[in-house]
Length: 285
Image (cartoon, rainbow, N blue to C red; front, side, top):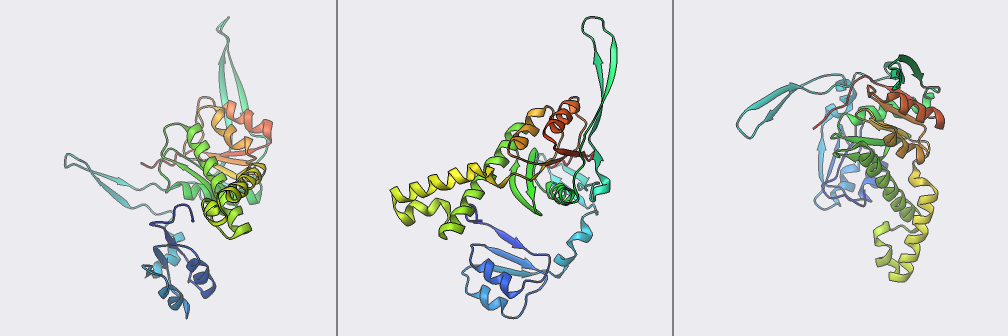
């Protein structure tokens, strides 16, 4: 991460081979953790100043602990202690997700007559979309609420965290995706971080290159088309989901349970976006 590398740690759940070590060495990191290291890897890392390398063999067993709860202790300022079990995501495979559905109660304001209407998502996720939805929902468990993630091809594209409103956090995740995408284009094109282009090519030429990159970034919508959108809590209104839909996301996972779930379902159906519910909020503070 060329934009926020300080304090960065790279954790691998499989042995670090020589090719991976060379890629890591091309970037800044302060910590590397892996179950083990292939011959020659430590020689590569030894050339990096202040790099801390840890061998933790049980890193290879991380997936074994996904469904396990631990006792979590939090101390309070008055000396008290809160003891609780850690969050454990119930939805860990495609079959655990529920197609988005809502049974809406409607009252006629003129007559007071009550009627009901069912809302059902029209399109279910593809196998590929389910892979990203499962991955994103498990990543979400470690992200501070309120949060929204964008995920594609088994990687996070943008993470928004710690906000009060769902629209705002969806926009933060979107903006981060745009920033990272622009930096990726700069690196692939010029071998320089986006923020260093003016320093590398001079003020005028660097500014021109940055403008061209941002134009391409906007055209490619920050790499967000085709992403899965992950929300740790329900969307109270459709506007949160619309932030991602405008950028081309194709699937959504969220807990569901809002009074206006029907409106979000309608929004997704109109855009041919698949949406599933977990029935469980991924709450973390």
